[in-house]
Amino acid sequence: MEEEDDCPELVPIDSQPGLPARQIPVTIITGYLGAGKTTLLNYILTEQHNKRIAVILNEFGEGSALEKSLAVSQAGELYEEWLELRNGCLCCSVKDNGLKAIENLMEKKGKFDYILLETTGLADPGAVASMFWVDAELGSDVYLDGIVTVIDAKYGLQQLKEEKAEGLVNEASRQVALADLAIINKTDLVEEEELNQVRNTVRSINGLVKILETQRSRVDLCDVLDLHSFDCQDGAKLTEKLQLVTPTRPHLDKSILTATFEVTGDLCEDALNTFIQDLLWEKKFCNKAGEPMSVIRLKGIVSFAGKVHQVMLQGVHELYELNETPQLWEENPHTNRLVFIGKNLDKNILQEIFISTVVMDGVKKAGV
Ligand SMILES: Nc1nc2c(ncn2[C@@H]2O[C@H](COP(=O)(O)OP(=O)(O)OP(=O)(O)O)[C@@H](O)[C@H]2O)c(=O)[nH]1
Ligand SMILES: [Zn+2]
Image (tube, helix red, strand yellow):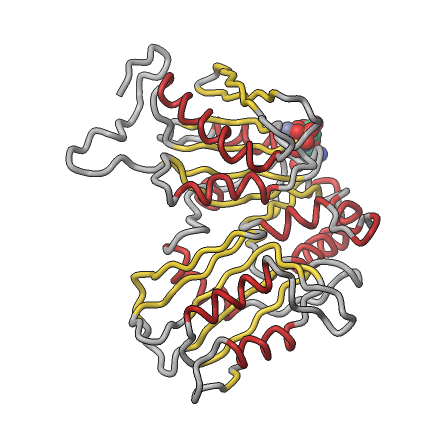
């Protein structure tokens, strides 16, 4: 560990010989303009914790300047690292350079225990999330722990219901769709009735998200940090959570909703890959009105023929991953549980295609 004058109480994190260097969790904090993201960051930084937290303020996705800075504050000091954005494709350049910048910083300033990344109000957290998620596999120093969105109790409803041209999803809804935790902040400014409406709307978009209500973004740190929302530790929790999900009804015709289904039987791995790729990449599946289904977030626990462990499915936008978990199948027959959050989703159509193309012959029986 490097010497740092201003951080005397650091917990050494690389000092255990023989153990691989620990990966550093990244929590992405999203939320509409003025919802309380910075208030949340400041609150986390001042709460008691033994972590050395680096805060990154993300300017990605704004304007077309060729260079963007990445501001990192740590122990009260602000560092800046420049990102070079090579061509027009912002998310590709962000993917390469954002991580590189973080790695450079850690080389210069010593390792962090935790990274909080505040995105700007209008940013699509999907691009930022994928940069940490994909690279985690490539032996990166950091991994995506969770996506938190802060919602303004007073203006949130209006922001979630805003209609965009050409049926585009508004930013606030997109942020809720991707979130693992939704913090409805500024509850001091609304009556119970208004708060109910915000809560119900958030729930109608994302049937899985954990919802907290706060003033001044005051949260229990263990509700925000170390969520492990994208790795196998989530697998066991997911099975429980999925059983509690109530299918949601859209608050607007075109809005995002959560569709879930359970199907028993073992799956063919290749067929599942094709199903997911047709859904995420080819946008081959349409609802009854002929509009293509569009998935923003995807999760599931599935059973592959011949595998004794549960396999976890995770997807963000066009990226997805299938990972075998340590969890053995206990129930028999095995129940595959899937959750889709997105637009134009028709649960029945999805389930029918899934059963007819992915479930192995002989056990094609739909569950609940
Ligand atoms: N009444 C009330 N005001 C709050 C609460 N939390 C934060 N605020 C205020 O709301 C304003 C915006 O808070 P920020 O934390 O800066 O919000 P932000 O999401 O970081 O804003 P941007 O970075 O501009 O998108 C500030 O003036 C805060 O003091 C709350 O619970 N109640
Ligand atoms: Zn802010």
